[in-house]
Length: 334
Image (cartoon, rainbow, N blue to C red):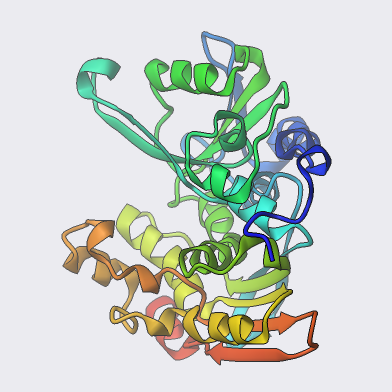
């Protein structure tokens, strides 16, 4: 089996083109979704989904689908499943392009105090515009680039990016200013928390890639994770969204190829393989001196994994949800 997605280059969809109708809906329904839309001085469209406005879960779900480049669906499930009232469910028939080619927050964007004329800036860009710039080696590994004439990027930030970053985005994406949309989603907001939890499937795809499983052998995927209330504290908010996936995330991958490879993937993928497993992510992050690179990389994965091999009809299961831990962190006695 090939390491690259199965579609030939000429047949691969444009994640930016597919996301465009979703971006247009977000802008057109800004008032209903509690987001704010404006053009900056250069003409770039800025969508504020939680900084100066409240944002909403509905906006977060739509942004989650934008992040997946129009190749995935995200919706709410309710009914007190596993003891928690609201879950996000996602699915994609093109999970490699949707999650790795678009949704993954892999574009590092930084500017110094001297460049900004004030505070230094750092953010990880996610969403379709990553595939226009192609700055990450990941795009070579999955064999994908986009060439659309519009682009959209999502940034988990609590302030608008400085002009030096916007100029870089336009230059690297090869876009005119009026063709770029930036969506800002602080994790402390409803939309921010929602769009991060909607990455439950993407977390599994990225972990599978790190484990060396061929990307082209993953042909479908779905996932679910509980949606916590956002916290006004940035570290706590980030901790809750991570915990939702690490301890409450359940993913089902459909693959092709060798049974032993599929079985091994199921066994090695869950977050419980990590030595850091078992504590709130906020506590783990603080203990690591707020340095992600000091945290065991095996932790960044869903809690429970199912892997089905289409070539053999066999399915493997590993890991499990730890809802007791999550309920202890999130639920207060009445």
